[in-house]
Image (cartoon, rainbow, N blue to C red; front, side, top):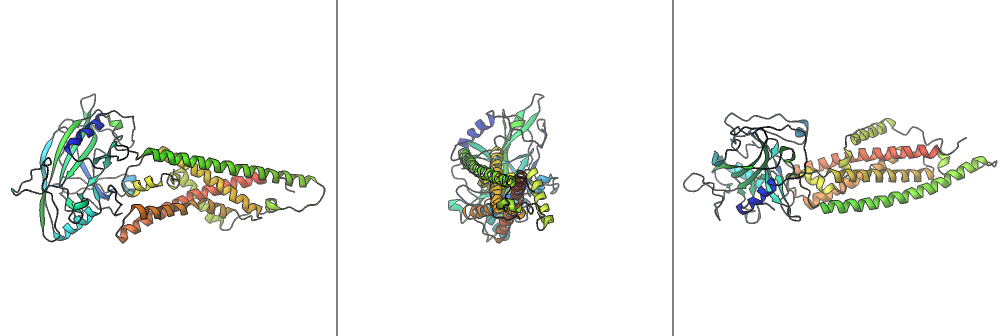
Length: 482
């Protein structure tokens, strides 16, 4: 639910000025600005978002300065900005922009440029609007956002990016292009009289140029003329913006609190508690069965060794001479287990273990939504590690009881079996939450899903193998072998 009317903007001010618990996002140092000092605005790639009560319609990102958009360009030319490794991996493409914003200096109806779209460009623009593409800016390391309200909790939060246009309901056949931006910059004054940026909000509007030929930026009228670009003729219009600076009590260290929002935390807790109960019950049952059965087996085998009668070994003791033999393709198993161990050490397991959180993780990866509920994710990871280890040990024991000593590869495959469920859930997510019309978007989605499944297979397979290896060594060290 987007908050776009003037009557609700005071809610945003109340949200920004309210104090919040400290959350420090590392990776950047505070930047102090003097009054009137330029505050650079950088543009990033356009990304698809999930509109309210809709599905994700594309997996394609587009450069901001793609010729099909014909956005306004800086007078000094387009300059690509340096990016971190994480930014590159996430597909960011950051450039400078022509916006002229200065600290604590308001601006009203500033003309950015006069743009034109050919029929081909208009078709391209309308297709991107129908895909619910969002514009992304970066101001002092903060993403420009729209103010939205959680429909369930009623909480206000900053949703990164803002709509390229509007194709809702009556505008589905003839979408509107947003060409005016009301920008609200929030700043915090430091003890030394300098100022820091702590929030960036944008309200996009579609405003057609009046007959006078000059834009008025009248966003307060009840029914302003909207701008839609035609695919049958050349289109000419203005890009404009207004800037309003608002003082905020939010310090620089907690400025990300408004951006990081957990949707319906009750679902997280309910799913987590439900999973914990099931896993604890599973582990207790498996442990009781194994302990009772293995204890009886060990006592029986050791009693047979003390007796003078010659008796033939049976069960898992029969394969004590073969169980530690080198498996087939040992190098391949070593490579897979080694890579899985490294990925687990780098916290990659949190991706593969996120079955409870999978919907929210996928929305973050594919729908450009912020996700920071890493506490839930870590607990879920621990649950999956425990479950994977327990199930792998159980099935390895069954194999040994069946006098099958080739447990190495099977324990790895049993542990990695969760990857198939991950891929299956990805297919379900595609069917229920995505509406990818282009073949390219479908290939991208299933390509990423396959890579995530391989990651999960390596990590959980390694856990299953190591748990089984530990159990086998403990099991055979408890019996006497002649």
